[in-house]
Image (cartoon, rainbow, N blue to C red; front, top):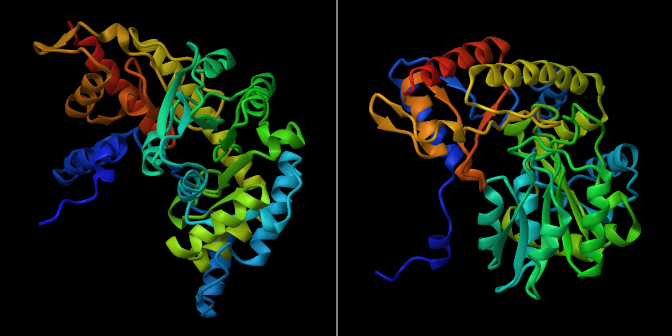
Length: 395
């Protein structure tokens, strides 16, 4: 038979899905697994959103929409950017997608050609490099500082004549870092000076615990003209499975993204679009309630990790992940099994403590593991006790 596409040979498997599969296998055996690997809120989708979706579903409103999305949702996204970010767009600048992940994929397909390079600060969300490779470009990783803050000088040092774009993610998955305005201004200046595009993934925008969110596109018309802002309803409104994301872009880019979507997926799920409309126009108090709950969980998680010993965890400023440094465990053993890497730590915690975490190698760091606190306080406290017991037993 003829060979399959060589393109997929460059793409690695998702480490987060791999961990979830192992955790699910243990659960199938009757093992109670504490899951700190999940990247989704454990809250229910707000009741008013479910009610609106049910109304449209019962009314049979399930036909195709325009590829870019229904007009009321496009206008609601325009209003959201204006109110929350000080960004003035028109409906022609907006595309509603099947999740924010597809908005990112679509943007990279529109921006990149074979041989281009895309700068990705590390640690990074695990899908960024693979999306870049699928677009025919090459990811170029740029180290952040000890607290995962982006260093503009390091970014500029990584640029070449092939650099086409920069991906920034604030608040960040996996680290929880939030880029301050001064850092974003420096990145914007670099992008303008070197004629680069910026893809700004702001999906965790509503989940910030220190300071506020600044969208890089809001800094000036010059940076807005070369920025694609990506967001969605998955994290802030506990709507991960609804698969609704959206992007705002300069008109020429938005047109190409809409054209690509018209051939790739057509419109995002029709009922889910109406549900997202209700979320964006609904009472923001439901989002604040979740944010306050996450803030409490964050404190318990970070304090608990730092109390274990050998683990060092700075408080994340946003999102719902903690990223402790576990390198002090390297060189130790557990039942004569050596611990040499973050992957070893994650494997040990899953097999011995039945606690699912994601090793830092999935995100471009070999000294950390990621733990999600998008779960109950009871699970967080029990999981921390299990982790402490395993660490204490290391020699």
